[in-house]
Length: 350
Image (cartoon, rainbow, N blue to C red; front, side, top):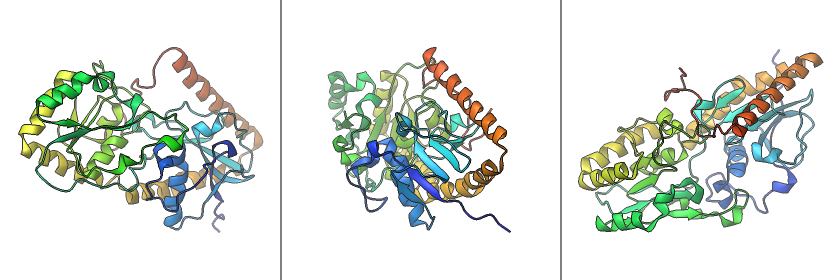
C-alpha cells in the first residue's frame, strides 16, 4: 500500500510576506524580480496550475514538506522536527544548517543534498519579433550585476560611434524591496542584443552560485546574448553556438561589430538559442519540479519520518557541518564566483 502524500508548503515568514500577491504565475508582478518571491510564490503558482496540491503560507507548518528561501531563514525560527522535511531554496546563500535538502540554481553546486532546478524565466516575457534590425543593445537586471566599465560613459560612446543605442533597464533596489523593481524586464520587443557581464578579465570561469537566467531569457526572447565568463552559462549553453562570451572590453566590442555586420551570425545564435530554450520554458521547468517532488522530496520525507531519532540527529549535525564549511570558505575569501566543479550541459560532473 502506497504511503499517503505529505502536505507540501512554500513558507514565507510574516516579516517577508508581500503586501499583494499575483493572481497568476505569468503576471508581470514586481515581486518576481526578487529571488525570495520568484522561488516561492512563482513555484507555488506553477505547481498549483499543474494540479499539485500545495500551499503558500506565512505560518510555519507543524508537518509536511516545507520549502523556504534562504533569505527567509534570516531571523526566522525555522527548524526541523520528526514531522518536517525542510528544503532550502538556496539561491546565492550558503547551505542552510536547518535544511535536510537544498534546491540550487547553478548546476555546478550539485552535490550532497543539493539538487539543481533551473531558475524560472522572466514571467510575461515579450519576445523580439523576427527582423533584420540591429540597433539597440540592452541589459536587464540589477546594477550590481553589471561590470563598472559598462556603467561608464565611454561604453555608451563606443556604441554611438557604431550607430548603436545603449538602453539598459537597471534596478538599484535593495534585495528585499519589491516596490522598486522595474517591471520592464519582460520586454525584449525592441532589443536587438543583450550584454550581461559582471566582471572582465577573469582568469577562470566564476560565479558558481549564480544562475543562467539571463541566458534562458535571451534564448526565449529570440535575442543574441554576449555574456561574461560564468560557470552557469557554460554549463547550460555552448560558447560560440547559442551565445557569445566576452572576457574583456576589446572582446565585447569585437563581438558587437561582428553581430552588427553579420546577419547570418545573429540568425544562427537565435536559432540555436531557440532549440536550447525548449528545456527552459516554464512548462519544462514545472515538469522538473514535479519530478523532484516525486523522485526526491516525497521519498525523502517518508525516510525522514521513519528514521530513528539518533539518525535524524546525525543528519542535522551533517547539515550544520556543511553550513560551517560553506561559511568558512567565504570567510577565507573564496568568493561565491569560484568554480566548484566542471559540469556539462547535461549536469554531468567531472
